[in-house]
Length: 189
Image 1: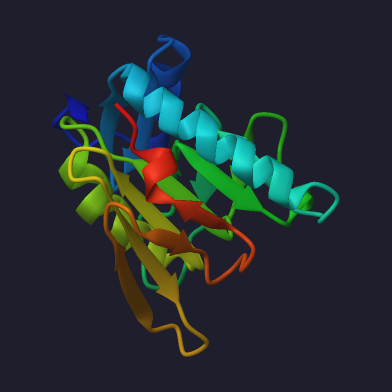
Image 2: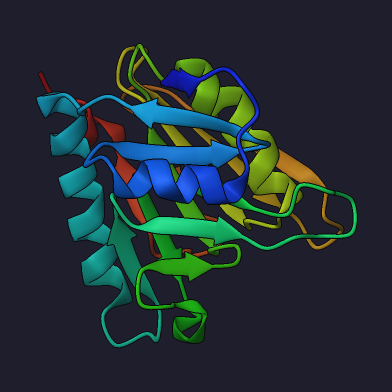
């Protein structure tokens, strides 16, 4: 994940830059970040997870979306910079009323990010903090380099719980209990 501009940008400046490029841009705390094109390994993992989630959620009232679908986080009372726009690799929502014509507004229930060497700190730190702050109930960070999945969930007390799923283990969602992934089926070379 690279910075497109190290200076503070208003949300209006971000939207203007977004309209002038076909690159994936994100906006967090006045900084614009640009995502590089994903690798083939990244896309295979994303496609696999999208297919599994789509099959699981069919007729449930929830839907899975993949990048590049914009997610706008709404302002909360603890944050003076109200606009934050991200593009998760995958997200699940059970609130179709939160869609505008071009974006999802609010915190999705479940987000999955797939690490690449260039976006590691962005997804592990910046996005983790953002997602937990805004109430994403479950966040999976899939790390193909280390062949593991880090699972962060918010419990009923808004406390963050953490699970680490290593190679040849099974990852199970706390939110969608029937969503289980055998890592041997996910991390293939």
